[in-house]
Amino acid sequence: MADRITVIGWDGTPLTEAAGAALAAATLVAGAPYQLSALPVPAAAERLVLGNVQLAARRIAEHRGAVVVVAEGDPGFFGVVRTLRRPEYGLELEVLPAVSSVAAAFARAGMPWEDAQVVSAHGGRLRRAANICRAHQKVAVLTAPGAGPSELALMLRGVHRTFVVCEALGTDDEDVTVLTSDRVADHDWRDPNVVLVIGGNSGGPQNGAVSEAAGWLAGRPVGYPGPERGWALPAEAYAGAGSAADALGASDTLPAHVRAFVLARLGARPGDLVWSVGAGNGALAVEAARFGAAVVAVEADRSACARLAVNARRYGVEVETVHGGGPEVLGGLPEPDAVVVEAGGPAVVRAALARRPDRFVAVARTFAEAEDVRRAIAEAGYRADGALLQSTPLEPLETATAEPAGAGASAGLRLGAGAAGVLLLWGEQIV
Image 1 (cartoon, rainbow, N blue to C red):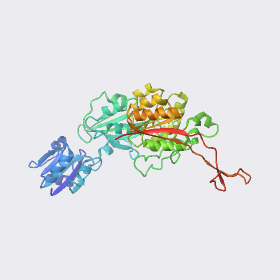
Image 2 (image 1 turned 180 degrees about the vertical axis):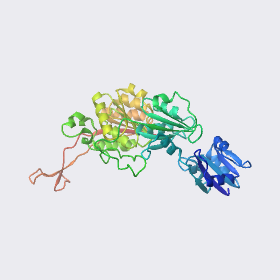
Image 3 (image 1 turned 135 degrees about the vertical axis):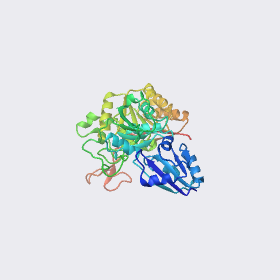
Image 4 (image 1 turned 90 degrees about the horizontal axis):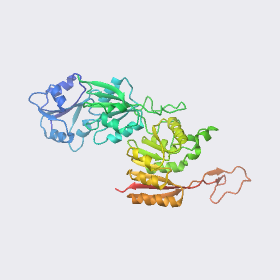
């Protein structure tokens, strides 16, 4: 094992005294080509280009002498420290961080960033990073070759955002460019870069609600947006109050217990993209978005689309609304991780399943339709299941002369009128 391993974070500024001393004493220095050429690496030291970090870690573990690993910014933040600290390498590290590239990028933009999401597009995660940008209003993306600003902008085609592209931060070639997402793909960008993706439509929670996370907890915790606490909110939470209820249309909202079950089957999480087809007023779409997923809601009724937009703004979430109906609408949507078909029938179900989401849920209106949907799910190669969900509320006995309680009721409660059952079918890909 190496006698000493020092990981130096470098942001282009002069090295600290400790970092300079470690570099001067090194017998092996690992880093990117531009770092190895720009820093005063001892002439006798072995130089190791830091490409595959796992291979570099094995070489470092075999080396006898003093090792320095040079990384960008803070190497403990989406950096090499995580890999080098793996137990199989047995390496003891001293880490000397600089300002992280994300902190530097937000500083160049003059923006606070404790409320930002930070994601990495390395390792084939560009699509999930793009979904985070769909779902959130302030995201820093650590790019990679082949997963840079242009590729990210193409993934977000049709979603309006402002890009702040920070190239070669901390070097003489540093450049910061601000432009709208539709213009990003027209440029050639240099590595390394950090992209800030800013903007959205929700404008934050309405009704004066302020996130409890502001000022003490970094990032936007899942479920914090909006004035309401909890999940599977009652229909009235989406229908307004009093005379406004009719205008907002409570009738197109799935019952709370059904929405809770559907959300459990969908398993929406940050980085996922969920389709809600036949979304109505968007209660289910909004709640999936509150789990941190990106959501595309498809609805044929324009007035329902307007209600959906109101509900998304109320709860401070991003929901992309697509007006239309029928299978043909789904062809132009980005790839989904999970799909719920609230309305549309077997034809829409088959079109959605053809896009191969990991998880799928559909609402059926009749037993005959349920059988058609179940068959479509199974024929698409999914593990199919289903249930009839029905909930009966408990009501207090108003007076001593009220009707006798039903079997199993307590002295002060009785079963209320049960709502009509809802047929649900779902499927998961067979691994």
